[in-house]
Amino acid sequence: MARLLFTSRNFGSLADPSPHQNLAQLTKLIGKPIQIMNQVHGNQVVVVNEPTQVPEADGLVTANKDLALAVRVADCLPLLMYSENVVAAVHVGRKGLVNKVSRYAFDQMKALGAGQIRAVVGPHICASCYEVGPELYAQISKSNPATAVKVNYLDLYAGLVEQLPEVGLSNLHLCTKELPDYFSHRASGELGRQVGVISL
Ligand SMILES: [Zn+2]
Image 1 (cartoon, rainbow, N blue to C red):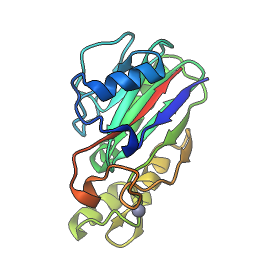
Image 2 (cartoon, protein in one colour):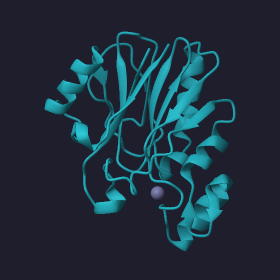
Image 3 (cartoon, rainbow, N blue to C red):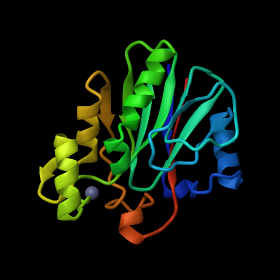
């Protein structure tokens, strides 16, 4: 059975990918090493079997029950996927939705023998708050039609549901821009990051 955790502002920022006090505290709380990644809005998904140097990636997958995976976010979607024997942590922003990073993570989980896959999306910017310019709106609503719920606003979660039809997805419905409990780049331009953590 997978274990999932999402931090809030209260825990402190985990923006820094190098070792630091907040990460050490989180590791202690989880009780196992936490693998993080240097997120670049790409579609690289890395399978990790043991704690390793921070890879440049936007998805981590493991079948090792002694390792936890983390995704760091402010307004992007922290996607935590799990099956009986494999878990994944994925960073899905607008670019990640377009480049299908979630599909790559899904495929890597399947390659490791995952059966039924479920997933939870933690705090992220909601559709009512995510306004974009008309050009961007036209572009994304064409490549990912489900994101288009209102003119010049994008529903990234709906886009993810559309992209992962085989996955049972749950949304915590916590908007980072609206709720002061969460770091939000859009709300205040701040650089702080909360995390989603998953392990078997
Ligand atoms: Zn909102």
